[in-house]
Image 1 (cartoon, one colour):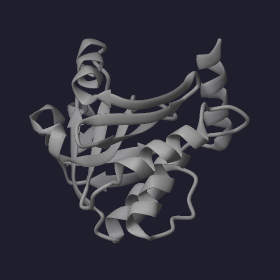
Image 2 (cartoon, one colour):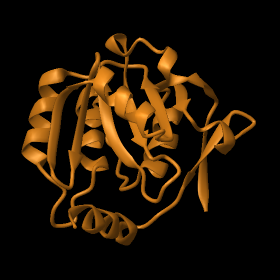
Image 3 (cartoon, rainbow, N blue to C red):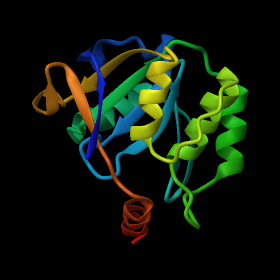
Length: 171
């Protein structure tokens, strides 16, 4: 099963990341993808090894290009509050005891929009955000062969898939 999102426009390297906010799905083709937030040139993420705060998007993009990661970027049609992001990710911490990388990102979206999304997976969240007109556009890196008529199919996965992936990363 998969969820279709799009229209996926162009290569995300053409974006000026100092002026955009959005959700970055790294290893988008894998089950599960890794999810982080981008806000005004900085990247935020909860990982198996800790929290990433205020990482410059230029360095994130360097890694994406070097490792030829497949990435989907959902650009938001609203602003994220940097203090909310920092506080939310710091309080959430590393991915232990069943925590997921989507949760702090979703919490930041909810706090910034005043909306509540009762979902546990990015393949559930993005279509709901699209319905609410919170996503202005989708962009990609290295997903050309995964697009169908400019749409991307987000693979479905389970909480067990997430926990297994985090366990593998900790080894």
